[in-house]
Length: 244
Image (tube, rainbow, N blue to C red; front, side, top):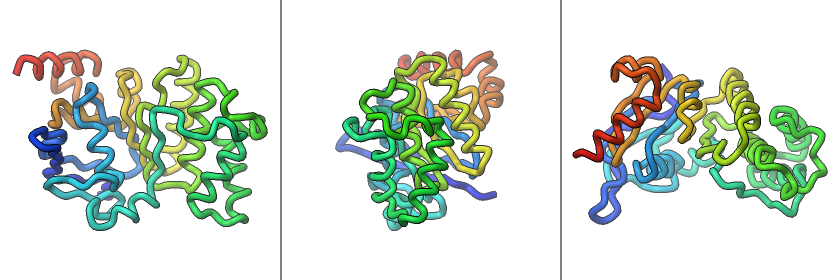
């Protein structure tokens, strides 16, 4: 089986604080994988190591077959990343933002024109190419950010709370795009605090205090905990960790 993410005993310490504690997991390619947990659970630190931005204290791992320590630059070129906060240029138009990121990714002029047309269609912004990004609604801004993240057609797309703060309709439309990308062969890792979104994922993992508490399909995790929803599982783990 091909694993897009393969981590073994991955650990990150900051002084006396262990942010990620011996994390071991394998995520198959072409899946939507949800990394769940409360703030401070180690999700962001894990993602930074997966992206090749942060070196682990110990342990090892590969992303898309590249070593996270020795081949971090190759990882960075092969993934797409979208942060929770809108980080594009609000004074540029939609198309100008896409043009800028296309140049960052090194797309040729021939590739650029065709790919921007494809991306605008994918994220549903084909009629808004000349609109100033800062005038877009929150949901449309997130779709533009997603478009910039997939311009170079990455093998792995990492989304950090992509639907935080957007309305329910925008969230649904965003998820339709995510599922379409996955169906077309893109592997996706995302974090979310919306447990109904986590239910849609092919695989989910719960992290608390830097430790992996559960990993599997949403159905498997609910069955193992004898609970009806991932929200109930989340609350169970929070209470368990707070009583340690």
